[in-house]
Amino acid sequence: MKSVPQRSDFRHLHPVRVRWAEVDPQGIVFNGNYLTYADVGITEYFRAIGVAFPGELAADGAEFFAVKTLLNYLAPAHFDDALDVGIRVSRLGRSSMTFSLGIWRADTALTSGEIVYVLAETASRSSRPLPEWLREKVRATEICPAAE
Image (tube, rainbow, N blue to C red; front, side, top):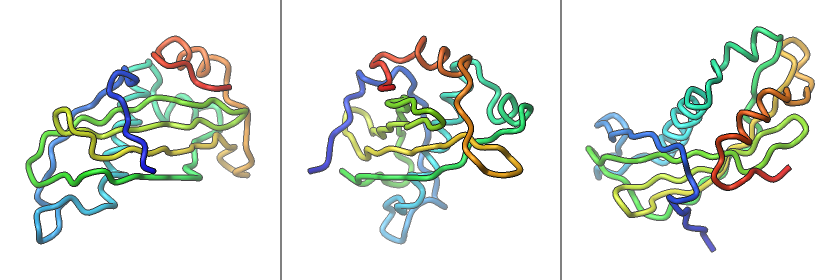
């Protein structure tokens, strides 16, 4: 069963408008573009919580790597639709952050899913614990507390 995201669980919503280059010949958004919308949403999430992404982490010799993505397609988006991309951190692991996402057109849920990022040393790509300052910023912003 596909879970329907609740807008009220997301403090961070970022608007996007579907461009012509993002749709197939039927005018429906090509499935891979939903990951691009999620990526934009995650970048804006970091901006909203006051984290210069990826700069603050890269300055310390680390960066995030996406290790898992999951999308549930609930309804299609079409050319020129105005969408809202909701992003929240649903889990803080030792070295990972799970971002839950929802994409809506008005009140219609179109997509739900999650993306897991792992913080790792830039050179060796071995995982590294999330810094406490980042955990605190996430804790301070979420409506639904992230599991830890």
